[in-house]
Image (spheres, rainbow, N blue to C red):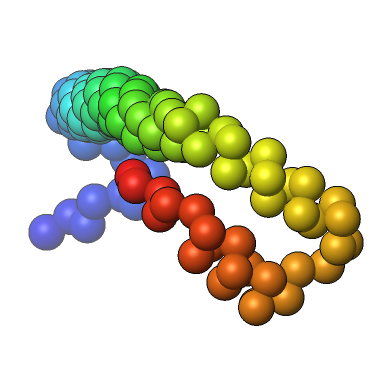
Length: 116
């Protein structure tokens, strides 16, 4: 029995090299495809998330603006309705410079209560 020469190439070596090269190419394409698919999915979801975040932010801004506008109009209405009382209170404060609890009680008892 002759021992094969360690430096000799088997005759199917070129076919094996081609098969491994083809296998490497297929695996490389599969990995690249999976990687690009994951990136595409991530960026699509990221874009959707940004759009949802922007939409939610606009909705919150509109809701807050509505609440603040409503409170402003309510406060402006009270100031307009109670203008005379505010002016008298300002005059009293200018005269005395400091109003204590008794001064405020006397002032409020002489005036009708503010209604919201």
